[in-house]
Length: 288
Length: 267
Image (cartoon, rainbow over all chains, first blue to last red; front, side, top):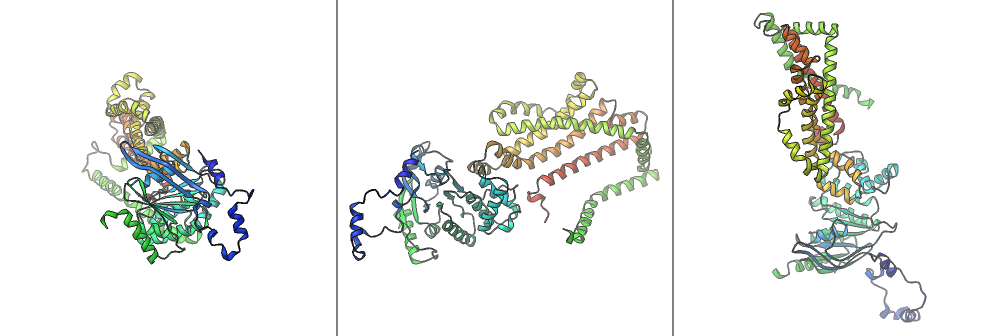
């Protein structure tokens, strides 16, 4: 793994020697800075890389599901992966979370600050243990990390963040679908993951609960500093939540689009609609 | 809790009433039976009246014979159950968790399962005579299969998505077993347990009736020799009660361990 190399490469270099550009910038009065304008607010090169795919392919028998994928995702970015069913987007997520291995190419996942690789996945189904009470289910997220009172305190804290502190002692079966998915979110977040992979986690929810969950997800992502990878087939959801949208088609990245819009974003705003249209054009290009 | 004493009293009253309805029909049958016996509708040579059975119960209770025989039978039933049940549980778990173990033993076990275990009685008497081992062997064999089959089924039907979730969250194999697989298999194991309890009494009755020198079945056979029809009926009734008791115990255990299950949640 070239993790260490990546770390060093992306750390801000110590100012040993002033570059010509920097010197020019220092000696130029502010009004004339134009050629050396400040970096764009979401300039990826300036930040740590959360994970990178280098020529990653995954084949199942003769079928190539992912074909030579190159992808760098900076830490803290909210990236959405879109594609038609069977395009390989879930496989991408399974590779990222270690549930599957690439056939060829390298996949580098940066380690979190505590030196542990905490990549968490949130599935389409809540996958709660029916025989464990809500708080205990959240503590599953702390397996091997915390135990006993410490685990209980952490899980109660994260439960109150998702608005379910008062349900800690209940069984999953009495919760609604949206509430169960919020418990699953709490379980994924309780250990403060470095990367949170979301495999269509809102796909099974009704439209209103879905919007509620999108807001919750966005606000928690803004509070905590994890990298979010959202696999979805809902283009509107992708542009509403993500900093960057990747469209996968036939195992390749067909579009890599930045969404440089302010948050919170309003559903149905013209900019969102324009970006949505662009993505749909990529997905169904030949029919438009 | 204390605040709702009135309510909970009411609720427990309702529970007694609800459970009580199950006993209504047996009580009526006993009443009709007594009347039929008293009026001579049923000859005393065919069936003893409930009052006669109650008398026999009291007589045998005082002589200590009843308690001794119940004790002997219960001990046999339970030890056979523990032996057969634990072997069944171990094989069920092993074959549910390991493909190698399943390939190795499942075919054999399924073949043996299709032999009615009571068909082995002649062979068992040849092997063990009419000693305790014979009864233990038969009960253990009878109890083994329902526990084995249902444990295996329970483990195989554990939601693979939950197992995958456990793996993703870094559970070790032991943790995965105790937190995901075993609780998931438990409802099926309980089904096996209740079947096994039924088979346990059935096997014991047959075994004690055919070859025994003590126990309830022996008591019934002795009574038949001396035409003590009241004692025969009493033994049968006691079997029924013991069976019901075992089943209630299994249900209680089920309720305690399966609280999470929607089927066991009280609104």
